Image (tube, rainbow, N blue to C red; front, side):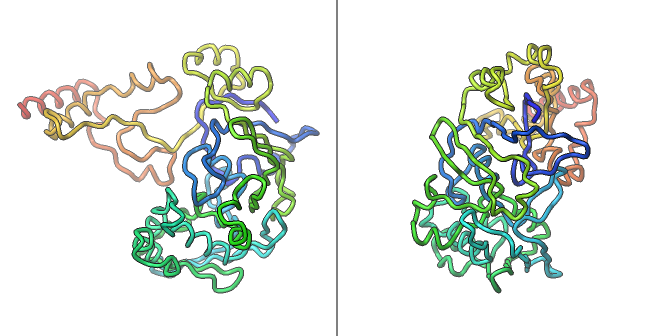
Length: 370
């Protein structure tokens, strides 16, 4: 597999390296890949994780109801088909009967119900329990606050392979939300038997394209193809190594020594990397927006006209093109352009003005603010 240096990488698929080869592509005899997760995960339990490193592990070890393909379009995951009521308050997911855990047991709707109720339960102390409230599952808010039993959560297993979501409000994009890794199923039988110890590396049972073979904290984790995964025949990699290197300089040194197949690098090396690795260097999209925030409690920033004037006068192009230089683009609203339907969000009218007009209007606002 071709090596790659990258600045920002967006993972749109459920798993990093589960894919089908391109037409005419000749694969290497040994299909293995070494990737830097950048840090050790806080946990391997989907209900107890947050952050990028955890996401890298979770998306390769677990699979949600729905995933995204290489073009960021919705694709069947554990759910083969799904539909919704006319008011978008009831969603039904029909699960694959050949979806299995890495121990060979069937993945059932009951595993999802168990996982989501466990996620909502305050006793689990999940950092993402509130995600269920964004999905508008019935009673999620009250359960997360400890006012209702998790058994009251609006998720139901009609049978082993039919999962039904009951929402409090219409959510036309509920299927999109089910892709988040905290909504992965967990093996109910294993969790009930082992408790929190179920997610220890030696005990972990997962349903994704890969299974965990070994794990050394702050060093590396070794994964291999999960033979029980429903689409195992189309998983190209036999082995996946996830390193946990937080220092970009160290990671890039490993890349140059052919001990890492993809790497970021310190910004001060940008010109050098572009020159020495022109064919390997690439940039990609990231669902992220960086911004400066005013302390509105202190003058003069308690005046909206002052804030608006400074926002107008700020030359975002200097920051993106001269300072960061990694392919970032100026932002005029919170939603990054890589997000679905971002083109429907209207930026402020002044974002289309030239510098002269923006500065003139900014001066007017400052004068009005005194």
